Image (cartoon, one colour):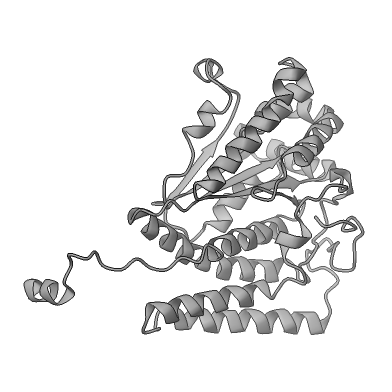
Length: 345
């Protein structure tokens, strides 16, 4: 989040309906941009060449990005001097529309994410080391699981690896703290999504004092070197912290208690973490300051409005894949298409 973004404008705080303070002019602009993106997407499959398909896909992605008044990659990236307490969970910076607009955007964006995901996977099959790691962090009930379901709604399970990290097992504690993380990293051409991550192994001992301070503080350098090595080896990294307010978390906790189908989501330890809210925020603030780097920056995403946080993650993911500048692999040198056609009759 750029400096000064703690100050909200008329698009930053939507009303209870999720529509925000939109004008008729804004409504028409968003509708026009999304219609243009839809039309461009429809031309992709009918394109006659690979170059034309890729150009139309890139143009459709640019049109989708035009919905934002300022790209989330700029507006929400952590910068030193920004404090997590300055990020309002109910704000919607950079997005001038409301819930319905966001849902239309996510539907279109997810179709293009699926396209780029297939392109990434195809390149991985042919030996490319390009891959993507997405780290999702946030307090309980910040919407991490919902983001995965919505953003990847049109994705191919072949090529997406999801893993949720909990308390380390006895086996995991016998190894270095990165051991269990390294086992879940994306394969070539794959996208891995971490619901919680190696950062828990810094934040938890920071808050609860379960390890000597010198030990968990030493992990900052290890994590930075770990991520630098991944990036140098072709793995892009998206680190996202979902900023939810205490009031919104309370609403979700009560909702779980009122719905028998959601009882399984609630644990008394959630209340303990809530009581230590300020300690957690202080620990995460230090994480951002120590580990938001040029190769693996943190993005602080307001998450009270789930439609907004899902739209942000969709935008960040799609543009990250697009910026890999991949092309579709050609036939192997030993494949003669005319001969194959003859053999197939």
